[in-house]
Image 1 (cartoon, rainbow, N blue to C red):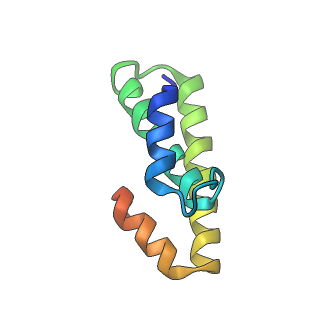
Image 2: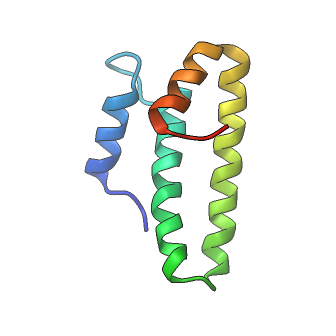
Length: 89
């Protein structure tokens, strides 16, 4: 249910803004989106897994807050992230 170390590294390299960047909002949003996608697949087969559903809702809320922050700080970066991750808003 969690993402592998290699998958996490590829997401970080795809969305980083500088060579040493590991925690920018874009990376955090991309990692949360990856986790949300995998957990959604899990919940399609295990519909009564309420603990995981609660975790999914928490991740979606955290991603929403990060997106709101990015929209407030730099709208162009926000639009770029939304477009690249194919998140609807």
